[in-house]
Image (cartoon, rainbow, N blue to C red; front, side, top):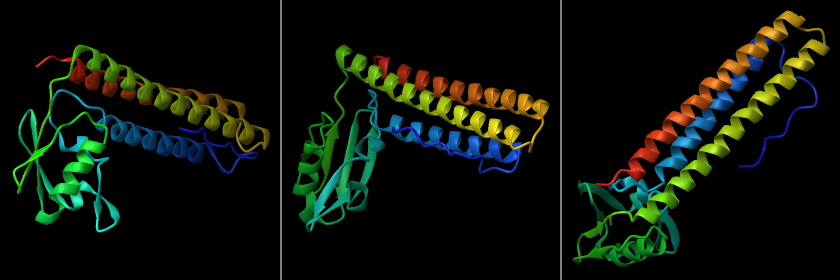
Length: 199
């Protein structure tokens, strides 16, 4: 993720605006974290594993869930039921080429994707990837805090707020940042437990 640019002068009129902007940006980071984590494989079957798969459908790359129905009939199996039987070959090829380590097979009507158990080494790789995703989001949170602190400094300089108001707002932004980073840590720990849990 690239760092967001900072504004040269405060674009906010008061502390409340600075805080609500920081809160909104931090919430986006959490949504992004959940999205990224849903792509990290665990030992359990989940249709979100296939979110990145694009199928060549009459010359256009289309998300898999737009050309087929996806199911998880058992913990280690995903089934893909194409709406158009002629797409079964391109769908199977797209899943193989998606670099997910999956080996689909079809019976002419339905594609079955067994989810192989993760090796110890693969679990550690995934845990490392997850750790990297979480750390990037923590850095984003700290960047948002820094931007908010800069905005508060500008409001003080423009004499829009008092030093007391600035101090209280800085504390409030710090508390918000700590709370949001704690949410990242909790989500990452839960996902890591899922990855490292042996079935």
